[in-house]
Structures are given as C-alpha cells and as structure tokens.
Length: 432
Ligand code: ATP
Image 1 (cartoon, protein in one colour):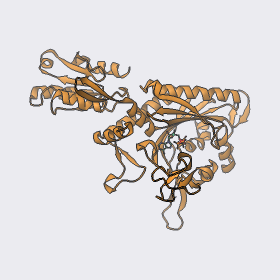
Image 2: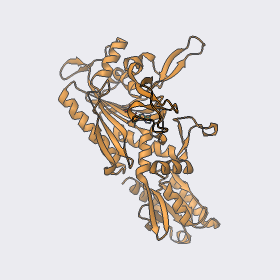
Image 3: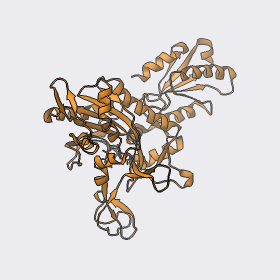
Image 4: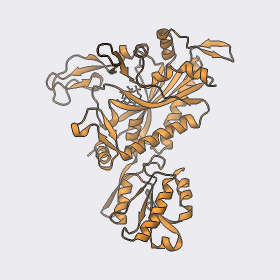
C-alpha cells in the first residue's frame, strides 16, 4: 500500500474523511469530514487565522458570499479562460487533462482525441421563477470576493497600503480528473491573503519573496518536515500573474502543489474597475496620489494542507521486538484531541468518578476524549493512531496522592503530574 492509500484507509476507519454521499455510491470529487477530520481541519484554519490576522496589524479578515454577480467571473477572466485543455481516450473514453498525459492512454493504451477546452466553473441558477432564473457560478476561487470588497474595506477601516485581506472558505471547480483522495476535489476550501502593495516593481517583488518565506515557514512551524517542502517557480504564467511560485509537498514519488504565491499585478482591481465602472483606486496620503495597487496573493488549499499534515505525521514504528504501532505525530496544536483521559480499570467506580471529574474539567479548555475499553496498551495504540499527544491515566495512587500518569505520544515516556497542575501542564506542552 502506498502512503495515499494508507492515509485514505486510516481516514475512513478512524473518522477523519469519508467519501461524499457514500451510501448512494459516492459522488465524484466530493469528501465529507468526520468527527476527527473536522477538528483537524478547523485547527489548521484557526492557526492560519491566528498567524495571518490575529497576530498582524496590517491584515484584516473578510467572509464574502459564495454566489456572486456573474459579471465578477467575466471580469476576473474565469468565464473566458478558466479552462483546462482536455483529451479523451478513443478506446476507453476516459477523459484526462492534456498536460497530465503521455502519447497513449495510461489506463488502456488507447489513442487520444485532440485537446478540447472545458470550463471549470460550476454553474448554478438564482431566483424562484422557472425561466427567469439568473445563471451564475459557485465561486471558482475565493479571491474575487476580496477584490470586489477592496474599496469597502479601505473606506470602513483604517488600513493603509501595504495591507492585506484574509479569507477562508469554499471554492468549487468541475475538475476533469478529480482524484488522489482529497488532493483534487470538486468542492474544497481555500485559505488566502490578498496583500495590496504600492505600484513599484522592485518593492512588490520584495513582498512576493517575503510572503513565499512566511508561508513556507508557517507549515514548518506546525511540524511539517523541511525536507518535504520546496518552492517551485512557475515557468508559464497564468493570465493574471507577473510572478508565481508554488509551495510543494513531497508525497514520496512526486511533488504536489499545496499553496500558490502569486504576484497578480493590478489585474483584478483594473478588471473590476473596468467592468463595474466604479473607481477602485486607492488614495495614498503620503504621496497624494490615486492609484491601483499591486497585489501579492498567498493561496493555500485547506484540504491539501490537511492531507499533507496527515501524510507528514504518519509513522509506522517498532515499539518493541515484533510489536508495531501506527502513530500520527501531529503537532499538538493540530491534533484533534489534545488529551485522552482513562480510568485504569473500567469496573472500579472510584477510578471512573475521579477520571470523569478530570475529563469534565479539561473539556473547558481543550478538545479531550474518554476511553475505558480494553487494556491500557490498546487504548494507547488507538490514541497514537489518531495523533492524541497526551494520555492521562487515573489509578489507585491517584486517589491517595492526587496525581495521574501522563504519557507522551512521541517519546512514550510517562510522568506523574499533580491533578491540580494538569491543566497548566497541558497548556504549556501544547503551546510549544
Ligand atoms: P492545480 O494546478 O493543482 O489544479 P491550481 O494551480 O489551479 O491547482 P490555484 O488556483 O492556484 O490552484 O488554487 C490555490 C490552491 O487551492 C492550490 O494550491 C490548492 O491547494 C487549492 N486547490 C486548487 N484546486 C483544488 C482542488 N481541485 N482540490 C483541492 N484543492 C485545490
């Protein structure tokens, strides 16, 4: 089994990610996040927000509508050019992206048709009266919701260039070949910053370099291994871009795009100004000039980050001779549960009562879980597999001495910690 398969199987078995609409036979390119997946994904988004908005004075947040005026997508260039060239195998009739195939069909060896354009925007209709519904699209990227609100944000807050607008939310694309688990889905989430900078070639390129480094080190700060990350400059640039670079993740036999950093020039604001006929220029107090700023975009996929954090954390280790464990070494900030609480034995009410008290107390500060099934060894293995960094066990000594055993997921070392100190202890460990 390769790593993709192992992660897909663990994700389903332990409740991270399920195939979308599974009881109806599935629905291509859609995935549902289960009880653990929703925690992991939310932790990633929260860390993103904390790093990009909460801890910076020059970035503010936004949450724009998914369904926007159809003219937005004409202005952005998506209606015209958001298309992948597509080829079809003449023998098995499977379709592939032209840039991802060789001479012959990889599935059956058949010949391909010529490439055809295929628009990726997902259509929808708004309105209640049949026949007079307005056709529009589910947003193909979250970016445009920010640019159409540029003026609103400038007018309603005290931001001054250089400044950024952050957003996290769903985007939709009719991907031709969805696949490799959640890597290429038809509905997915993005986390972005549009960072507006002066119209200056050199300065804007400095910001571009700054954001490349910032974003790569964010992934590293949450435990992704340095050797599994690299920059990949784009050789062919998209219609809007002046410079573009991907942060790629090493999936073993290949490198895959996780996030794109793009210098979009003034493309978006210029086009929206043209199509909306509104003045979108920015008045610079210092130079007393009106201008359309340049923008540097950092555009990451939440689902791809979730997948790659899982892959990076996945380890199979020999605990002792002949005994293996699967462990997700997720950064404690990302782990779905920060701690699991156990009574040493399930059938001793005094242990259960004490452990329940601790569990209820910790719940006020952390996402924690409870387990009293099987023996301790089995419970440890079950928590290792879902990445719980700490296991807290209440035993008979706890009742006498007021302390518990805390076991560390990665080192498997145990130490005794006073119950009165436990919350503080975990806070310190998790904030590492
Ligand atoms: P790709 O070349 O892989 O199709 P892209 O270059 O079209 O991706 P962008 O438009 O730059 O992607 O989107 C920014 C980010 O959004 C990507 O780096 C990726 O993390 C995420 N993303 C894009 N398309 C998908 C998808 N179909 N499924 C999941 N995530 C996606």
